[in-house]
Image 1: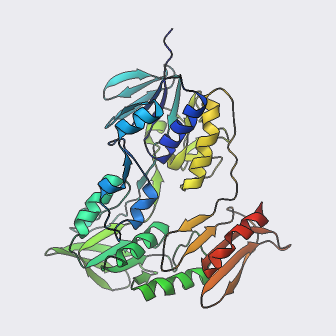
Image 2: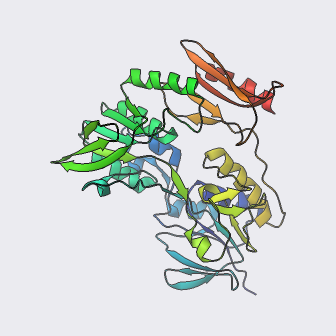
Image 3: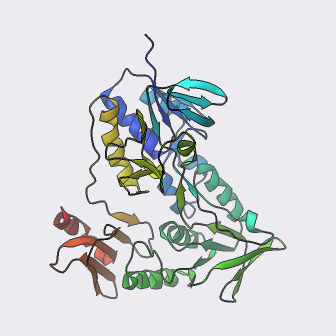
Amino acid sequence: MVTQPVIIIGSGLAGYTLAREFRKLDSATPLVILSADHGGFYSKPMLSNACAQKKSAEALLAKSAAQMSQELNVEIFAQAKVTAIDTQRKELTVDGAARSYSKLVLALGADPIRLPLVGNAADAILSVNDLDDYQRFRDAIEGKKDVVILGAGLIGCEFANDLIGTGINVHVIDLAPQLLGRLLPPESAAFMQRRLESAGIEFHLGTSTQLVERQGDRFKLSLSNGETIACDVVLSAVGLRPRTALAAAAGIKINRGIVVNASLQTSCEDIYALGDCAEVEGKVLPFVMPIMHAARALAPTLAGKPTQVRYPAMPVAVKTPACPAVVLPPEPGAQGNWLVEATEEGVKALFQNAEGKLFGFALLGTAVSEKSALIQQLT
């Protein structure tokens, strides 16, 4: 009897980490990875701080698909297009042909959110979501002077800080009144803004881009507050949306992401999801540490030992050298208040309830040295 393979759709951090963890437990079951791109392995978080180091996409590629295939004893199909999942027959349609699976893992990732902008240059706005995107962006900024970034969240601020290191003038636009609105309390955001402004970044907050027009070889952006900004390149960094279309078409339950339980099981038998595409018990967790913990839990489940994912305290490091930051945001709906201690060199913000129980923190500047002690307090 032929053993059908475990198939992973996706060759990002989630897919490859799962493959690595699975192979530690099971060296015999056929394992297949279907990759929408070249299938090589690289660290996606490095994309937002590699320009100042003048790193090409090739330099960021850690291992090729062939190397990963040999290392993990996995069959990798690059540039594979998966168009359908038949949950009853346990088959995929891949490049027009049927491919059977024993268990299927959706590690599809997420797509950049595209703002509904108007103007004859709206289609020229770039985003960076993978290695190929990064190379296109690197090529676009070569020899240029001015870049506008749409979005003052984590990725927008990281790219802004990185680009300043290349000598480029950077403008950051966001409708929100502060930086990192989903992660930082206002006092902490103000501190980071001052540090990044001192580094040379210009922020335009509380306003939005309404029109993007070509102006010769450059662009002109018209903002809702009446300002106009001229630049050479526009980068959108307003967030990601989980890739759910393939799952939805197959009748798999979706919400914000592909809905899974603590075992990372979808609504369909023998189909699992993890990474940026997954919504784990109501939470979408698009960061490195949750992906690593999910992969380490799912691997034994696939190997025959059902395991639930359990997340420890997982602080997020913001890669902005002008203002080092580590944030552990409180759970949505957590009851409490931010208590902020600020000096000229750093800000410590603690999210506590009325009894003083700690539920989250934001550490900036010199205060990042307190991370380990606060994690101990949480655990």
